[in-house]
Image (cartoon, rainbow, N blue to C red; front, side, top):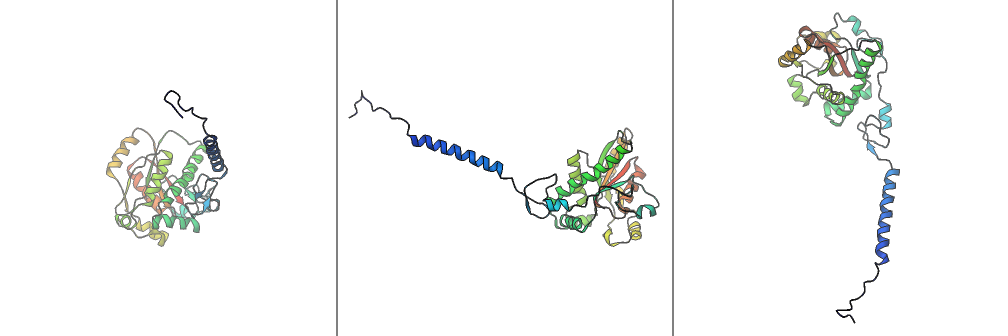
Length: 273
């Protein structure tokens, strides 16, 4: 019987409590080891398939291996990997050169269609990152020819007409340019405006393209004024971005409008050729 002067002596901490703590510690360590031994799984942006080893692009091995990268060029002007007849037939070329990331294979056409016409936003980051390949091709050539110098780089894009923009909801060239700007840190400017609507160029002959693009583009007055002040102080290299380079008519018309009013070297970057 306990009395106020003789309280009950406390016993030792039960062994069960210590064992539970040890068991929990072992369980936590096993979970950590399992997490390290089991590779993380990713979802391929292009095919939605699952993969474990992540590369530079968010693609599974099959999709990544299917990309027809342009690794060498036959035409120094347009960057085509085969013999080109378009550049030799052009009477005047107003851009310095164009470089494209990939050949326009059926798979690349499918990817672009999903992004361009179905609004698959995840492909924006993928295609934009692929443009880095074309951008670096410009620099590798400049370095090999010892023509690299001090200049300011800027990015702009081929604009859509108001009707086409309303139909699609976004300008795919503008979005790709923004991605490239984010990755390179190069400023993006909205220099060009489309002042007249044209039908899709993909369904036209080369002659029809040339005639249809006359007077289509103009310079944004506010941006033009800023560039005029900039070019009076330093050299500027401007990259005009588009999704696909076919005959070069669009890029050449853009470059013509730009170089008529600004002392700027115009280069083209397209995702596909």
